[in-house]
Amino acid sequence: MPTLSSNPFSEISPQIYDLSKLCQENGFISPELYAQHQVNRGLRDLNGNGVLTGLTEISDIQSSKMVDGKKVSCEGKLYYRGYDIEDLVRGFVRDHRFGFEETTYLLLFGKLPSAEELEEFCALLAQYRSLPTSFVRDIIMKAPSSDMMNTLARSVLTLYSYDSKASDISIPNVLRQCLQLIALFPLLSVYGYQAYSHYHDGNSLFIHSPQPELSTSQNILYTLRPDSSYTELEARILDLALVLHAEHGGGNNSTFTTHVVTSSGSDTYSTIAAAIGSLKGPKHGGANIKVVQMFEDMKQKVSDWTDEEEVGAYLRALLHKEAFDKAGLIYGMGHAVYSLSDPRANIFRQYVKNLSEEKNLHEEFQLYSLVERLAPEIISEERKIYKGVSANIDFYSGFVYNMLNLPLELYTPIFAIARISGWSAHRIEELVNAGKIIRPSYRNVQAQREYLPLGSR
Image (cartoon, rainbow, N blue to C red; front, top):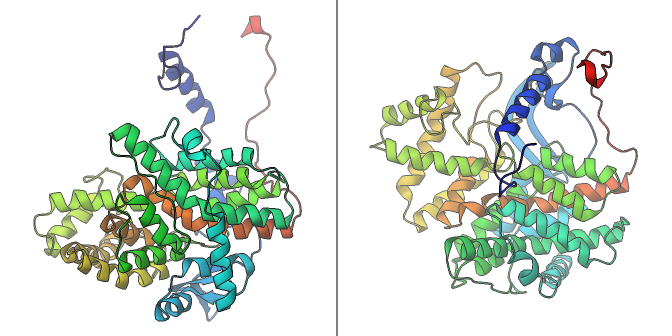
């Protein structure tokens, strides 16, 4: 009888390797069968368009328009509750105020708040920005994980035990739970990182209490940095990042996960933990980390960052699987929906430039700008593409987080800190319009077989 090693939680035994071959052999389905049975793999048709699975009033993405009866690519647009994201950003930037809390209010309640409503809402979030007694000691400080998304999910699931109405899915109770999670996500993420940094890397442990008068972005920097210091520009550009990541239609993987789990009648903590698990995937929330790592490799391999030929040669090497991680991708370029432009990247670009000047990283910004200009041309020359290619939000967000000296471990959790607002709005929308459980159909392509007794196999 095979025996497990002293560490069965991490070691893969020869027996498991052998059994995994059976999984691969018997789990493979020919791509031809998908076409034969007209299955939209990944809920996308052959042109890459998402299959319509629901209705929402929370946000909209536009990347094409109809011209003379034909679908034509256009500059990308993103709307929150019908408002152009560019107008929303222009509004709070012009008035010199932070925008994430206002954006969260809009996503949840479907209207822009008045000055008084916004003040009351910020005060409510501040009240909820407090963890249960001894939660940091008993939960976050124990068995710290190297992956902050796992830490975040574990903390969210554990909060279920502290909630006497954890399974109540009435709208008032779910709204209360969502507001608490929106307020607590920064603390859960930052404290989780501090615990890991202390126990794994031997760094000093800092647990700063959030300040009620500070915005979400300010509190992230305040609780993360040993001296709690930050510049106004740093806080405002992080706030902008949160606004741009807060919501992105109902069709992205984690938001769809939120709808699916909510439709089953599950509790808020389980639903949000499932969404976190989705966002953790590198195909969804981890792309900006790859962008930063790719540029670090590029800066080492390219001697002259202003030489278009040398930078272009590196980009071609990426596509030919000869550079960086040999994946054949230029990370941060292209999007599943947008073609000519990602409005979030367009908004971000000018503020990124300002931050790069404050941080004396102008040359790095120029390199990013050069890659943004060259990459679409090179990709179109090297690959057959059915739509345009442009820089997406991940192209610049990783650079921003790097300039803010945020640890790589927090890049995806910051995405979650923003997106919890959108998830919460979609969860409530699904509950308000509660219908049948979301249950997609799969076609079986395994032929029926005759059962064989054990002795005859």
